[in-house]
Length: 208
Image (cartoon, rainbow, N blue to C red; front, top):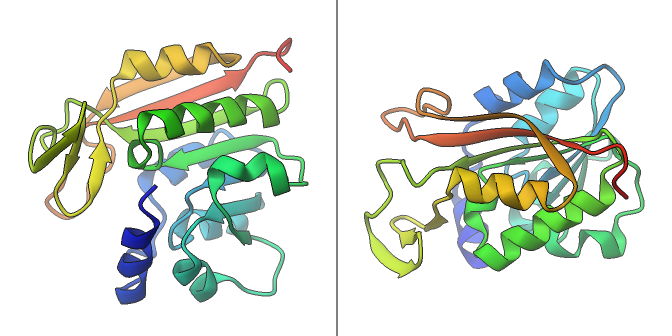
């Protein structure tokens, strides 16, 4: 995980404050009073959005720069400056769902596999893991400096994701795929309209 890049990024700006279209989409699948763990919350825009709509939010990010800027004394959202890959070592709260927007493609393959394994262990039966990531079908794929398989660096490193590989990894860790969309038009920002993969994966009732 490129902690130094994100510390530098957030020291200059907090970025967009409005919730992502993915957060708006996900909220419709949750109920008032549900709890959710957001991996890689960034400036907290989706965390604040969920909290404003009655969701108890626990939000993790490794950048102390951004967490110090958005963290408040209130308990919702509860922002935690920690590495998401060691979440099981320090996270004492029970959660209903997990959320990762533009996070899995910021991790290398080993880190992403570990993050999914963690979600498979800490989510309760029937809990949902919501993820949105950049696809190998994105127009940015193949541009910039090639660093590894499916990994390219432009303004920062991105690992573009194969939908079927992600589905297989989730299914191997106790999830049933309820919905998987691979399309553009879902995460438009200014002139950028990337092809993204949106997945709704439910923890199997008999998984532990």
